[in-house]
Image (cartoon, rainbow, N blue to C red; front, side, top):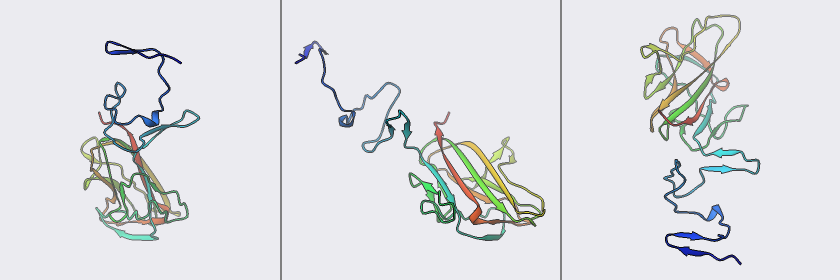
Length: 204
């Protein structure tokens, strides 16, 4: 049996193995790592040494068919999330930050987020545009011009438009996708559209 001796403020000798699962209430932590959580698991490492983090992430779709006459500022109706709602059935909202009634993602924490969206519009649209809106305002490019939008000309086939971006958000910032055309109005086929995103890391 190993002996443990207390010498001054230090402990010498062999210590018994300690299970990490039994370590609770430790405030000092590891240098550079802090936690405000009193329950749950934020980070796990599986048997293959793959690190799994508990980060906000979502992907929402729509149950609607053609939505016609979508005027400037009208929110795209992404009303299906964790329960699916179309033939893809790959929707998710791991921390419950997407509202299927307001079609809006609310950032739970400050951070840099990755956002993506796919819109499916009708072939005979002269033009169709949508944009990420942050707290009711369009996401801008170069600080002055409207950005992150989709546009097209009329043709023979329906059109798919994919847009993605990274952006710094503050906690409680609200993000959704809205039309940025008044005339002609933008139309879309909801079941072929999706909107998603996830936390990349901290803000600057």
